[in-house]
Length: 115
Length: 112
Image (cartoon, rainbow over all chains, first blue to last red; front, top):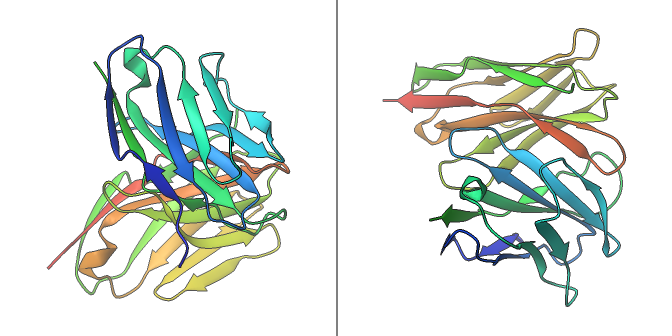
C-alpha cells in the first residue's frame, strides 16, 4: 500500500537556524497537510495545501513557516529561524480528492530537536 | 472555540477484554469524525470515519458510534490484542479543506 514518507526521521538543529522538513505524499493525492505534536501534547494542525497554494493555516503557522511543492512530488515545510519551542514531531499528511470521507494518510513524522 | 475531549486519558486492560473510549466535541460546523490509532513513534492511522448521518461504523474489531445530537462518539474495541496498545485519537473535521481539531488521545495498554 502506498505510504507518505518523511525525511529525515530525526533532525537536530541549532536555535536560529533554518530547517527544511521533507515529505513525499502518496502520488495521486491532491491535498497536503502539515501537523505538529509537541511531546506529550495533542496533534495540532499547521497548514493545508491544495492546487499549489495554502488553503488554510492555523495561528501557529506564522511568518517563520512556509510550505512549497517544488517539483510536483515533494512537499516541504521550512522554518526560517528556529526557536526552542519548535521542538516537536512534525507530521505530513495527504488526501486523494475532495469530499469529506477520504481519510488523510499520515507519514511517520520527523522529530525536530532545537538546541 | 472548537474542542475535542477524550476520556479516559489512559487505560490498562487485559488481553482478550473489551473496552470503550469516549470522545466529546464542540466543533462547529461538523463535517465528519475520525478515530485514529497512533503507535508510539509512528504517524496516526485512520480506523473509522463517520459523517453526520452515520451513527455506527465498524472496522474489524473496532466499532465507532456517533451521536451528532449530543456531540459524542465512542470507539469500542472487542477481544483486545497486545498490538492494540497505542494512543487512540478522535479527530473532528469541519469545513471544506478539512480543518481539523484533534483530541488529546487515550493511551491504551493491553497486558497479557
